[in-house]
Image (cartoon, rainbow, N blue to C red; front, side):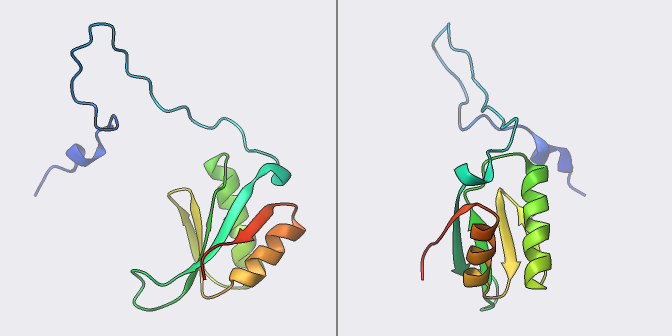
Length: 117
């Protein structure tokens, strides 16, 4: 068995070594609070790539805490009556619900736009 701890190492965006004696690596700032709904610019698009030809609806552009993103994803899945997931800063809804999701987000006060086809 291979040791899995190697995969969990923190990456530093490709910085391996610096010859600058005064160099200090600055880590990415984490979002400490979620922007209000009116300030969110969400993009809703359909996608089939890597899903065996099945259509999914993706929501990108959320700025805020992971917990708030998960709550939004849960609300959208419930409203559409389908499954989905929240990972890598985006919400995935199973099926072609781009129009319905856009409408729901706009009713909730988000700036939501359809992107792509």
